[in-house]
Length: 541
View 1 (cartoon, helix red, strand yellow):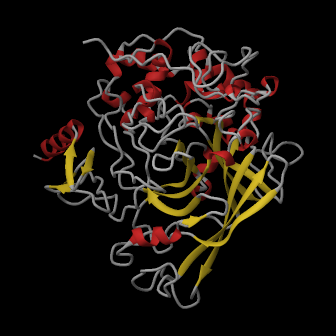
View 2 (cartoon, rainbow, N blue to C red; view 1 turned 120 degrees about the vertical axis):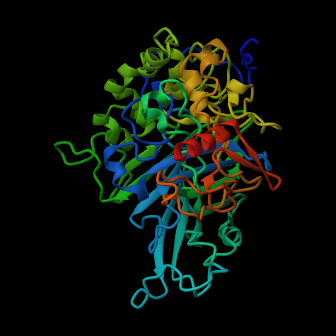
View 3 (cartoon, rainbow, N blue to C red; view 1 turned 90 degrees about the vertical axis):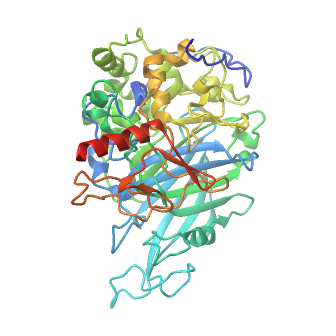
């Protein structure tokens, strides 16, 4: 059988008028390549990706998603997550957004690497009784205003434009609490619904806890899944939660000049600003190249495409990268030097014998840094570079690491987890949907599939984790409800521990089901799940 081929993508916008001059390329590339295939990076997506941010989980961006809303295709949904590896039973204080931080989702409509629209959430804590109670809740919580909910967070949501003008969209809005368990919050879905609020002028938003939607197997560090892929197929993030901020807005609110027909492409990233924080000190005491943000705030975390900071940026520069905005990316020479000659394909060649693609890797630069267009690089199609926008000044375009979305591509009737490589133009790297398998996609891209149009058959199985442990919703905010069962399931008869999926998960004969997908109340076990169960059973006999 011939390996599947991705199509030559149709032109989605007018061709850029002239090629890019001097792609100063930052980071990207080798990029992300994959949560895995690089030794020494103990993180998933952007979970704990840099030394300083690893010690500040409430400021740590984990993932960013941007997609045309499948049930409301005249809108775009943006989702950003924080606080990696939330164990569901992490009481008594559980997981709160920081009061001294600003949580941002930024949109670049003209390709100059600067935000044209910024949505910012700032949070405040409220205790009903902080003198006589240590509990998060003192009884069953059925409503967000129940007196049994001892701790609440409210937030203000503002919208800032390129000229600095700011509009308050919501004030004293209530966030959904951490899910403290089924006895305390028997109907968490109702609490989430109460916390999902309408926005003036259209759209809606939610802040609160959710199941971590990212899925992958992190056992890559044992000689790339054991040297022969025998260790793949286990979702490392199964059972963990994150804090989610989601917003759904009309396309015109994001498009350059408010015209998504002429200017459908936007770049998206999220950041965290900490008050009074200096990320990298220079002689003047300010952050070296850092985005200062005003009012005593400093940017300490940043995320666009998944896996960039982990896999490309040297440890010495990871904190500095988190402090930069995209228009400064091309100035990071130590990272630029690694982009066109990435190490990951060489590692794959050394372990699996699959030849590394020839360098320089301008296709990776195009995917992650400039967006895909015929004038941008070797991928012969127009897809998602801001240079395709009719009203963009091409001479002001700057390469920068952003998650780029062409809003004119309609949602797929039958989404393919491999996105564009799976002939589904609505998927990653054209934005990112919750179910896009970015690990497998980026692995294939790193091995040259985006340029050749041919999937590398020897790596077609990827990491063996093809879907999240919980099904995603069909309406906003789409993310699954937070887990409630403990992730650590080590017992006398299961000393190795394991993952128990809270909230509707399934355990079979004492072994958690890995790779199970709920379908209409039933359960479909993937081959990886069955093999995992067999390995675990045989290991105990």
